[in-house]
Length: 316
Image (cartoon, rainbow, N blue to C red):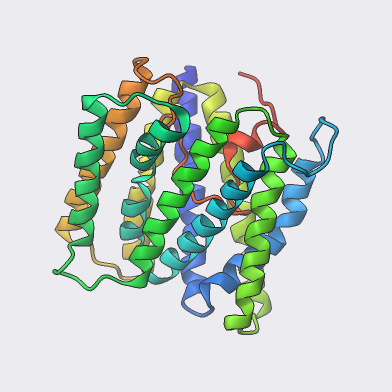
């Protein structure tokens, strides 16, 4: 088996786990407030993530070298986490994924001021076409837009901003700082939100929150292994397989019907994202920000694999 095939298969497996992770969120979201789910999933993630953090070989404290950028990235992680959990709890799965799939497009835009990227006509056209796909999915005027749509858009934008900030920081910050600040930010923000509404959780539902934590972390490790095994230009497009899982889960478990416009919009967004990845793979981009993007909101249950791999340096 070639490295690219192995990488693609590992990425497909990771996306299946991520989709299952999101299904559990949606299931609990029908009973409990979304931010309560985020809090307990974060709480139960700490023992698992702490085992990884103990591998950090670099001495030092949790004080960032670039305080402003780390604080901004932490804020982005909080918005991304809350937005994603709220969106998955309230919207059809396919609509959430369609909006989150705009992350590479938004990263391409944000990389201009933050990374000094030069984006040519081809990639600008792909961004414009991709964002038009979002309008097709949302169909403003034809359907009632909900707070969940705004939450998903905010989550995608914040996740894109956080990814670009990581690229800007490079390796000037300790991995422990890059992991712990967003983790603690999500944990405390979700904990504070419990005052807005709390419902006691049954033990089986707490166990489901633990499943969210386990699936997210295992998925992140599979992503690391995928990018170690195969080329990024081959592995990255496999992220879009989540829409297949979302379609199947939505139909089987939640009786979600898919509007034809949603399929058209998703196809446009995916096509645009793959085109940008292909262009970067040809050496058009210096930083390759979209190629290395992960279509996941950064919460403690799904830490950025680009940071996580610094603790777990798997070899090709």
